Length: 178
Image (tube, rainbow, N blue to C red; front, side, top):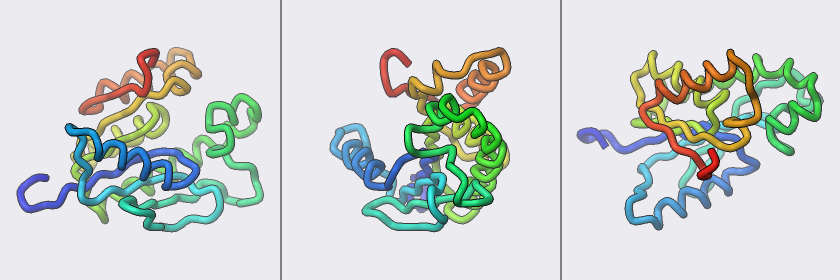
């Protein structure tokens, strides 16, 4: 932590419940080099409603990105990549999802003043986190997963992924293949 400021982290992720994140954080805590910040906040899309919950050591902030909850969601289920492949019309939710996440992340940064942002997935989380880095000067770590590293191709997507990785302070991969 810097000076007297407590260590805080914001994790931008997709997960079914905060329990999965807690397991990851507890695993990190058991590793000698892995220390948990005093305050961990997870920003994740809402599947039903939105709100903030505290689950163990994690405060989960969920953001709403669908105007109508009866409409099938982009996130969850099989995951964004699989959902987009199975239901191409879900691409219509991508702009709403991205803008909603950006606004929610900005709000979370202003209220929690994190020391670091750890974005799981290059797109869209890593890109959005890197963009907010320029406004709030918070270091960003991006974790690449196989699905986002290999699923989407094309010149624009490749440039966006490269930008997110190059402009982050550090990046990691969850497998050797990634």
